[in-house]
Amino acid sequence: MDILIFILKIVIPPVLVLNFIPLMIWFERKGSAYIQERRGPNRAHILGIRLGGIIHNFADVIKLITKEDIIPANVNRLYFIGAPLIAIFVGIVTIAVVPLADSVQIGEKLVHIQVADLNVGILYVFAISSLGVYSVLLAGWSSNNKYSLLGGLRAASQMVSYELALGLTVVGLFMLAESASVSEIVRHQGPHVLHWNFVQQPLAFIIFWIAVFAETNRTPFDLPEGESEIVAGYHTEYSSMKFALFFMAEYAHMVVAAALITALFFGGWQVPFLTTLDLKTQAPFYLYVTVLTVSFIALFFGLLLLSQFKKGKYRDARDYEVLVFGIPLFLLALAGGGSAIFTGPWALPEWGRVLFAALVQATSFGIKMTFFAFFFIWIRWTLPRFRYDQVMNFGWKGMLPLALLNIVVTGVVLLWKGNHHG
Amino acid sequence: MNNPYLAIFCLFLFALLLGVGFVIISHFIGQKRPSTAKMMPYECGIDPLGAPRAEFSVKFFLVAMIFIVFDVEVAFLFPWAVLFKGFMKAGLGGFVFAEMMIFMGILLMGLIYVYGKKALKWE
Image (cartoon, rainbow over the protein chains, first blue to last red):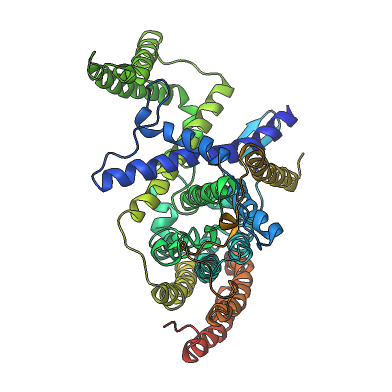
């Protein structure tokens, strides 16, 4: 039993991050397409089933694996191969300290729903994420290419500049929560929305959010890969799966960044206005409501899809595409709604209540995190790119003093409160 | 099993194996047809001119050095921030806060000196 929990704890968080990557790529392609009033990818298919472009991700994986793996002459082979490995390593490993739900009591053991509940939580995140600088610097230098070198240097100095602001903003959170552990910070925020850190520490939230964009090299801070100036930056010379690793790492960084924003500023797994105890004691009622709501939504979308069915529209397998999701959704709605109505609110055993509470909290975390992950893409297709001097000036003369100011203000407010409210 | 760092270590292994596995698979599946032109550094189709590892602006180096100074400051702030409320409960809040303000003030002077020297001015 112990071994099983241990293995599940190690495997589930990284697998979640890895499964988010295709979703993010789909968001990026379809999202950008609709923002620019295009249709986006819709050609790749399996037996005629296209699923609105999701199949393109599988096609990409097969394409990238079978491509020729070019290692140019005169590159430093060790660093050239090592750099993408560091990138994906950083992307996957950082998720370890982010809790997905409240700790669960199994028998006599308290199980944390995260890889490891470290008391130095955020320090671990910073320690690992700053290794990402090595990846871009080594890739840029070892490629033996001018564009790569410039891209690597740009990325490295941009990442270290914004890391300072990032590190200073979380000091305010430490002062409030009296702990550096991510799960402690989440627990300290409580279920009340107005006690979440984006209300308590608004300046820190905005600075953290902007700095995270710079750390993940996303637009408007994507100068390291500014394709109009330096081709593709530090991964100009990379091909095949090594390029794919950089690509995956970029999306993994975004997913982890979204998870961190959620955990630090938006209450993590906290369900608005409901504590873990509420969820556990009232579990039958909430389960009943959830099942009914989900069934209703499934019925709506199932019927919407089924109503689109028209034989002879394309005269091939595409005619039946709407049925792939339509029929299962309709059946799900019938099964869920029917069992809820006829067998009524169910009396749940103790483990059922615990499991339900954990699942609801994980869903709450997932919804918030998906929103912030989508936000990265939204920003990318909305804002233009900075100039390099603007990036550096903004980091050193805007973000850094403001982050220091945030610490001073937090300290003064805490002292004032301490003196006036006992 | 109870040591959290054991789980972290296993996660490290998992992440490394994943990356190495991908690279090895593509190394064996992908075709290999190298040619002289393919092995040349990418330079938009023309032959590369001069050494690729050319000299670069010293500003990048300066940024890295200034970063080290301020990163150490951040590292000093972390334990102070975690213990701040504890000191307040013990009635030492004002004193500890003033101490940290002096420390941050000295570093702020350093930052102003860096601005004044135009070390962070990019053209």
